[in-house]
Image (cartoon, rainbow, N blue to C red; front, side, top):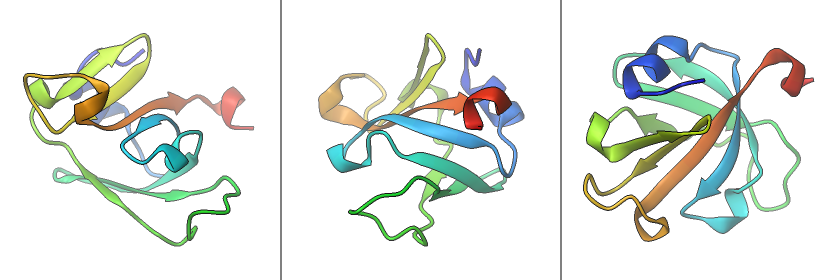
Length: 104
């Protein structure tokens, strides 16, 4: 279970899958995303789950930001656009990293 930003940075690798559990755009909740690139700036991912509202080719980038903008709880990694307010109003995205069994 990922407990902090340092662990998240070390654990994310290309081709890993994420399940979006919360998002500033409600239609993105439930997406399964594959990590396509990870570097010191952040990571990119693409949608792998079927969706009517998303072009699967879109490749959003999520920057790492600084630790105070992140929250890690019960296996859910969340990033906010505020370092002081970790509420739904300030949520950018929440996700959980899927293990190999969950991904199949």
